[in-house]
Length: 304
Image 1 (cartoon, rainbow, N blue to C red):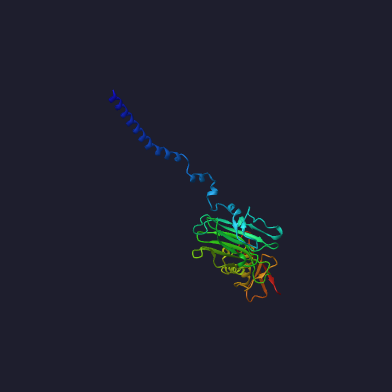
Image 2: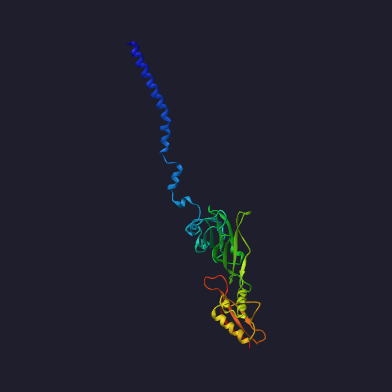
Protein backbone atom coordinates (compact mmCIF):
# COMPACT_ATOMS: atom_id res chain seq x y z
CA UNK A 1 0.00 0.00 0.00
CA UNK A 2 2.82 2.40 0.86
CA UNK A 3 4.62 1.45 -2.38
CA UNK A 4 1.46 2.18 -4.42
CA UNK A 5 1.08 5.60 -2.77
CA UNK A 6 4.65 6.56 -3.61
CA UNK A 7 4.13 5.45 -7.26
CA UNK A 8 1.00 7.61 -7.60
CA UNK A 9 2.81 10.60 -6.08
CA UNK A 10 5.71 10.17 -8.53
CA UNK A 11 3.38 10.02 -11.55
CA UNK A 12 1.52 13.12 -10.33
CA UNK A 13 4.80 15.01 -9.90
CA UNK A 14 5.90 14.10 -13.46
CA UNK A 15 2.55 15.29 -14.88
CA UNK A 16 2.87 18.62 -13.02
CA UNK A 17 6.43 19.10 -14.26
CA UNK A 18 5.38 18.39 -17.87
CA UNK A 19 2.50 20.85 -17.57
CA UNK A 20 4.84 23.56 -16.24
CA UNK A 21 7.23 23.03 -19.15
CA UNK A 22 4.41 23.26 -21.66
CA UNK A 23 3.08 26.44 -20.06
CA UNK A 24 6.54 28.01 -19.98
CA UNK A 25 7.11 27.18 -23.61
CA UNK A 26 3.77 28.59 -24.71
CA UNK A 27 3.97 31.79 -22.65
CA UNK A 28 6.36 33.72 -25.07
CA UNK A 29 4.18 32.79 -28.02
CA UNK A 30 1.14 34.29 -26.36
CA UNK A 31 3.08 37.35 -25.29
CA UNK A 32 4.37 37.98 -28.80
CA UNK A 33 0.89 37.60 -30.26
CA UNK A 34 -0.48 40.47 -28.12
CA UNK A 35 1.27 43.47 -29.80
CA UNK A 36 0.73 41.98 -33.25
CA UNK A 37 -2.98 42.65 -32.86
CA UNK A 38 -2.24 46.43 -32.53
CA UNK A 39 -1.66 48.28 -35.90
CA UNK A 40 1.94 49.49 -36.33
CA UNK A 41 2.53 53.20 -35.71
CA UNK A 42 3.32 53.84 -39.40
CA UNK A 43 -0.12 52.65 -40.45
CA UNK A 44 -1.65 55.55 -38.55
CA UNK A 45 -0.21 57.93 -41.13
CA UNK A 46 -2.25 56.26 -43.82
CA UNK A 47 -5.37 57.71 -42.23
CA UNK A 48 -4.11 61.24 -42.99
CA UNK A 49 -5.39 63.01 -46.12
CA UNK A 50 -3.33 62.47 -49.25
CA UNK A 51 -2.47 66.18 -49.35
CA UNK A 52 -0.76 65.89 -45.97
CA UNK A 53 1.39 62.98 -47.15
CA UNK A 54 2.56 64.61 -50.40
CA UNK A 55 4.77 67.71 -50.45
CA UNK A 56 4.66 68.22 -54.21
CA UNK A 57 2.41 70.50 -56.23
CA UNK A 58 -0.59 68.94 -57.93
CA UNK A 59 -2.35 72.13 -59.10
CA UNK A 60 -1.70 75.85 -58.93
CA UNK A 61 -4.06 75.91 -55.95
CA UNK A 62 -1.19 74.44 -53.90
CA UNK A 63 0.74 77.68 -54.53
CA UNK A 64 -1.80 79.81 -52.70
CA UNK A 65 -0.09 79.20 -49.35
CA UNK A 66 3.54 78.71 -50.36
CA UNK A 67 6.49 80.50 -48.75
CA UNK A 68 7.91 83.42 -50.75
CA UNK A 69 11.13 85.44 -50.43
CA UNK A 70 11.42 89.16 -49.84
CA UNK A 71 10.11 91.08 -52.88
CA UNK A 72 9.24 94.74 -53.48
CA UNK A 73 10.78 95.64 -50.14
CA UNK A 74 8.42 93.40 -48.14
CA UNK A 75 9.64 90.71 -45.76
CA UNK A 76 9.61 87.06 -46.71
CA UNK A 77 6.71 84.97 -45.45
CA UNK A 78 3.97 82.53 -46.34
CA UNK A 79 1.13 83.45 -48.64
CA UNK A 80 -2.40 83.12 -47.37
CA UNK A 81 -4.95 82.50 -50.10
CA UNK A 82 -2.48 83.88 -52.62
CA UNK A 83 -1.62 87.08 -50.74
CA UNK A 84 1.13 87.90 -48.26
CA UNK A 85 -0.61 88.88 -45.00
CA UNK A 86 0.37 91.66 -42.63
CA UNK A 87 0.89 94.40 -45.24
CA UNK A 88 -1.15 97.56 -44.85
CA UNK A 89 -2.87 98.65 -48.08
CA UNK A 90 -0.98 101.93 -48.05
CA UNK A 91 2.30 99.98 -48.12
CA UNK A 92 1.42 97.86 -51.15
CA UNK A 93 0.98 94.11 -51.54
CA UNK A 94 2.49 90.80 -52.67
CA UNK A 95 0.18 88.49 -54.63
CA UNK A 96 0.36 85.27 -56.58
CA UNK A 97 -0.56 85.50 -60.26
CA UNK A 98 -2.14 82.06 -60.38
CA UNK A 99 -3.29 82.38 -64.00
CA UNK A 100 0.34 82.59 -65.18
CA UNK A 101 1.86 80.12 -62.71
CA UNK A 102 2.55 76.50 -63.68
CA UNK A 103 3.06 73.14 -61.93
CA UNK A 104 4.85 70.03 -63.17
CA UNK A 105 8.37 68.82 -63.97
CA UNK A 106 10.71 71.82 -64.02
CA UNK A 107 14.04 70.29 -62.93
CA UNK A 108 15.61 66.94 -61.95
CA UNK A 109 13.94 65.76 -58.76
CA UNK A 110 11.13 68.26 -59.24
CA UNK A 111 8.55 66.18 -61.07
CA UNK A 112 5.90 67.89 -58.94
CA UNK A 113 7.59 71.27 -58.87
CA UNK A 114 6.13 74.66 -59.71
CA UNK A 115 6.77 78.01 -61.34
CA UNK A 116 5.11 80.82 -59.40
CA UNK A 117 4.62 84.33 -60.75
CA UNK A 118 4.37 87.12 -58.18
CA UNK A 119 3.37 90.72 -58.71
CA UNK A 120 3.79 93.32 -56.02
CA UNK A 121 4.45 96.93 -55.13
CA UNK A 122 5.54 98.99 -52.17
CA UNK A 123 2.65 101.43 -52.46
CA UNK A 124 1.92 103.33 -55.65
CA UNK A 125 3.11 102.14 -59.08
CA UNK A 126 3.56 98.39 -59.47
CA UNK A 127 7.02 96.87 -59.70
CA UNK A 128 8.17 94.26 -62.20
CA UNK A 129 6.96 90.67 -61.81
CA UNK A 130 8.99 87.94 -60.12
CA UNK A 131 9.36 84.33 -61.28
CA UNK A 132 9.94 81.76 -58.51
CA UNK A 133 10.84 78.07 -58.90
CA UNK A 134 10.03 75.32 -56.37
CA UNK A 135 11.01 71.64 -56.25
CA UNK A 136 8.84 68.69 -55.19
CA UNK A 137 9.63 69.42 -51.53
CA UNK A 138 8.26 72.94 -51.94
CA UNK A 139 11.73 74.40 -51.54
CA UNK A 140 12.63 77.41 -53.67
CA UNK A 141 15.28 76.51 -56.26
CA UNK A 142 15.47 79.76 -58.18
CA UNK A 143 14.09 83.26 -58.60
CA UNK A 144 14.12 85.90 -61.31
CA UNK A 145 13.28 89.60 -61.32
CA UNK A 146 11.93 90.66 -64.73
CA UNK A 147 13.43 94.12 -64.17
CA UNK A 148 16.36 92.58 -66.03
CA UNK A 149 14.37 93.35 -69.20
CA UNK A 150 13.21 96.82 -68.31
CA UNK A 151 11.28 98.85 -65.76
CA UNK A 152 7.81 97.61 -64.79
CA UNK A 153 7.94 94.48 -66.88
CA UNK A 154 5.22 91.88 -66.41
CA UNK A 155 5.17 88.15 -67.13
CA UNK A 156 2.93 87.54 -70.11
CA UNK A 157 2.96 83.74 -69.93
CA UNK A 158 5.05 80.73 -68.87
CA UNK A 159 5.74 77.65 -70.99
CA UNK A 160 7.29 74.38 -69.80
CA UNK A 161 9.03 71.74 -71.91
CA UNK A 162 11.00 68.63 -71.02
CA UNK A 163 14.29 70.57 -70.99
CA UNK A 164 13.52 74.14 -70.01
CA UNK A 165 11.01 76.62 -68.68
CA UNK A 166 10.45 79.84 -70.63
CA UNK A 167 8.93 83.06 -69.31
CA UNK A 168 7.56 85.54 -71.86
CA UNK A 169 7.46 89.16 -70.74
CA UNK A 170 5.86 92.37 -71.93
CA UNK A 171 6.29 96.04 -71.16
CA UNK A 172 9.99 96.15 -72.03
CA UNK A 173 11.15 99.70 -72.72
CA UNK A 174 12.32 100.34 -76.27
CA UNK A 175 14.46 103.21 -77.50
CA UNK A 176 12.69 106.55 -77.67
CA UNK A 177 10.17 105.68 -74.97
CA UNK A 178 9.77 107.01 -71.46
CA UNK A 179 11.05 105.22 -68.38
CA UNK A 180 7.58 104.50 -67.07
CA UNK A 181 6.33 102.49 -69.98
CA UNK A 182 7.30 100.33 -72.89
CA UNK A 183 5.85 98.43 -75.80
CA UNK A 184 8.51 95.78 -76.21
CA UNK A 185 8.24 92.06 -75.52
CA UNK A 186 10.77 89.36 -74.84
CA UNK A 187 11.54 85.96 -73.38
CA UNK A 188 14.06 84.24 -71.16
CA UNK A 189 14.51 80.48 -70.69
CA UNK A 190 15.54 78.80 -67.46
CA UNK A 191 17.38 75.50 -67.05
CA UNK A 192 18.63 73.47 -64.11
CA UNK A 193 22.26 74.10 -63.11
CA UNK A 194 23.77 70.98 -61.57
CA UNK A 195 26.72 72.97 -60.25
CA UNK A 196 24.61 75.69 -58.62
CA UNK A 197 21.72 73.33 -57.84
CA UNK A 198 19.11 75.84 -58.93
CA UNK A 199 17.23 77.14 -61.94
CA UNK A 200 19.31 79.73 -63.79
CA UNK A 201 18.29 82.11 -66.62
CA UNK A 202 19.80 81.90 -70.07
CA UNK A 203 20.23 84.61 -72.66
CA UNK A 204 17.43 87.14 -72.93
CA UNK A 205 15.72 87.66 -76.26
CA UNK A 206 13.78 90.77 -77.27
CA UNK A 207 11.14 90.62 -79.97
CA UNK A 208 11.77 93.34 -82.54
CA UNK A 209 8.91 95.11 -84.28
CA UNK A 210 11.20 95.97 -87.18
CA UNK A 211 12.33 92.36 -87.63
CA UNK A 212 8.71 91.29 -87.91
CA UNK A 213 7.94 94.09 -90.37
CA UNK A 214 10.95 93.01 -92.43
CA UNK A 215 9.58 89.46 -92.63
CA UNK A 216 6.36 90.91 -94.01
CA UNK A 217 8.17 93.06 -96.61
CA UNK A 218 10.34 90.11 -97.68
CA UNK A 219 7.23 87.99 -98.28
CA UNK A 220 5.64 90.82 -100.32
CA UNK A 221 8.79 91.23 -102.42
CA UNK A 222 8.92 87.52 -103.31
CA UNK A 223 5.17 87.57 -104.05
CA UNK A 224 4.34 85.12 -101.27
CA UNK A 225 0.89 86.21 -100.14
CA UNK A 226 0.33 83.23 -97.85
CA UNK A 227 3.66 83.85 -96.14
CA UNK A 228 2.89 87.56 -95.79
CA UNK A 229 -0.40 86.80 -94.03
CA UNK A 230 1.56 85.08 -91.26
CA UNK A 231 3.08 88.46 -90.39
CA UNK A 232 0.27 90.92 -91.07
CA UNK A 233 -3.44 91.44 -91.52
CA UNK A 234 -5.12 91.06 -94.91
CA UNK A 235 -5.51 94.86 -95.07
CA UNK A 236 -1.78 95.43 -94.50
CA UNK A 237 -0.82 92.73 -96.98
CA UNK A 238 -3.13 94.11 -99.68
CA UNK A 239 -1.86 97.68 -99.33
CA UNK A 240 1.78 96.61 -99.50
CA UNK A 241 1.03 94.20 -102.36
CA UNK A 242 -0.55 96.94 -104.46
CA UNK A 243 2.21 99.40 -103.57
CA UNK A 244 4.87 97.08 -104.85
CA UNK A 245 2.90 96.39 -108.03
CA UNK A 246 2.38 100.13 -108.64
CA UNK A 247 6.06 100.92 -108.10
CA UNK A 248 7.22 98.02 -110.22
CA UNK A 249 10.06 97.31 -107.83
CA UNK A 250 10.72 95.83 -104.40
CA UNK A 251 9.83 97.70 -101.23
CA UNK A 252 12.45 98.76 -98.70
CA UNK A 253 11.99 99.21 -94.95
CA UNK A 254 13.37 102.20 -93.06
CA UNK A 255 16.18 101.34 -90.60
CA UNK A 256 14.22 102.71 -87.63
CA UNK A 257 10.65 102.24 -86.44
CA UNK A 258 8.88 104.92 -84.41
CA UNK A 259 6.46 105.02 -81.55
CA UNK A 260 2.91 105.53 -82.77
CA UNK A 261 0.20 107.50 -81.01
CA UNK A 262 -1.08 104.29 -79.48
CA UNK A 263 0.83 103.15 -76.41
CA UNK A 264 1.11 99.57 -77.64
CA UNK A 265 2.07 100.33 -81.24
CA UNK A 266 5.07 101.16 -83.44
CA UNK A 267 5.20 102.61 -86.95
CA UNK A 268 7.64 101.17 -89.50
CA UNK A 269 7.90 102.92 -92.88
CA UNK A 270 8.10 100.99 -96.16
CA UNK A 271 8.84 102.71 -99.47
CA UNK A 272 9.93 102.05 -103.05
CA UNK A 273 13.26 103.79 -103.89
CA UNK A 274 13.35 106.49 -106.58
CA UNK A 275 9.59 106.67 -107.06
CA UNK A 276 8.89 110.06 -105.50
CA UNK A 277 8.04 111.33 -102.04
CA UNK A 278 5.66 108.70 -100.74
CA UNK A 279 5.66 105.68 -98.51
CA UNK A 280 3.53 103.42 -96.35
CA UNK A 281 3.13 103.38 -92.58
CA UNK A 282 3.16 99.78 -91.40
CA UNK A 283 1.54 99.84 -87.96
CA UNK A 284 2.97 97.15 -85.74
CA UNK A 285 1.19 96.00 -82.60
CA UNK A 286 0.42 92.90 -80.52
CA UNK A 287 -2.62 90.78 -81.20
CA UNK A 288 -4.73 89.96 -78.16
CA UNK A 289 -3.11 87.16 -76.17
CA UNK A 290 0.04 87.15 -78.35
CA UNK A 291 3.56 88.10 -77.32
CA UNK A 292 5.11 88.78 -80.74
CA UNK A 293 4.60 91.71 -83.10
CA UNK A 294 2.09 91.80 -85.95
CA UNK A 295 1.35 94.26 -88.79
CA UNK A 296 -2.19 95.36 -87.98
CA UNK A 297 -2.56 97.96 -90.73
CA UNK A 298 -0.77 99.74 -93.57
CA UNK A 299 -1.58 103.32 -94.76
CA UNK A 300 -0.19 105.44 -97.60
CA UNK A 301 1.35 108.82 -96.92
CA UNK A 302 3.09 111.47 -98.98
CA UNK A 303 5.44 114.32 -98.16
CA UNK A 304 4.42 116.40 -101.17
